[in-house]
Length: 441
Image (cartoon, rainbow, N blue to C red; front, side):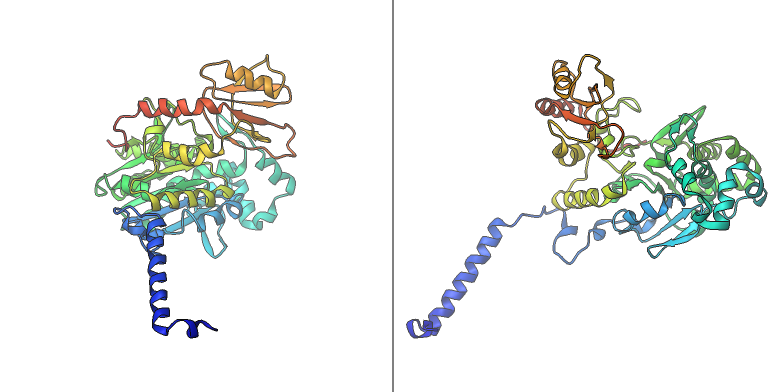
């Protein structure tokens, strides 16, 4: 309170102005610059959704089932579906989940098939009694069902194949003016900004069917888990083909086990061939991905832009979403798979992780401890990682993150990576890349 007596009021004002000016200079010096080309994120007033130009031309169809919808859907509402203006969720059971309506994908299937086909026994019980129609023992048994060469042995999975062709018709009816239809599952993660840039290379007025290539028999089709894109003319073609041959495709579906293959068959019959889109569209989550994979020939994921991942657990969605948004704010170019490895996977690798399975797959019978397992891996020039569980050592030449193993699991697994080899791995992987970017015709 003695300041006015010591300094004139005009000097105080001048000192305050100088101090504020110095604070402003400090702010300018230390603040993180925003790339000039990434104007969509400048300023706090704009949402990440503002950067997704062209998303209004897309209709997203999310396919799920009653057994998983309450657990898996909520993660999408604040991540993958947050910015999507036009979407619909379809299941085998109509309901509302956290204020979002879930439609019945099967309500227009031939009533005779619903009433008599064994695949629909689960569906009939579900419609009559809801989830309470099933015992705890049944639900536990189905949840533990393993994948086989003929699909997963659970009634919900067997029913799922019947959804694909009806959803094609429902999507076209619900949003007939959409330029693109994106079909995803409840554990598919779409990187929308990347996907939209990829789609911009195609003429949506032409028939296009694009996704990660799979084959059963002589049918090549887009794998449903990775998500796939269908242009409006392509969807019109396959819907018309089905309408003209409804009994044929019902019989084909009944005799088959994979609905995405059924759709691929109808697409081919309609004259719409698949664009093999791996690795732009991928079938694994980042933690399970072999970034040096030779799936699909010479197109290794490391070099290409990433538009989708699959098998991401619900708890991982928000974390990966924050990572993606942070990347898009700081960069004017989109994420490649190698960027996901460097910035998302690599920070999680260490010399030892307890209760963790990094998916090493080569048995090493000579190692009887975690340290012996590490030594066995180090002694092999191309070994990148290892895991040890109950006197069992496994090594791998691939570099994968893997996943946590519950501490109460029957088999405890610990994993490790040879960190000094990772830098060389990254340099080798970078050397294989030329000018690869998008998967195009």
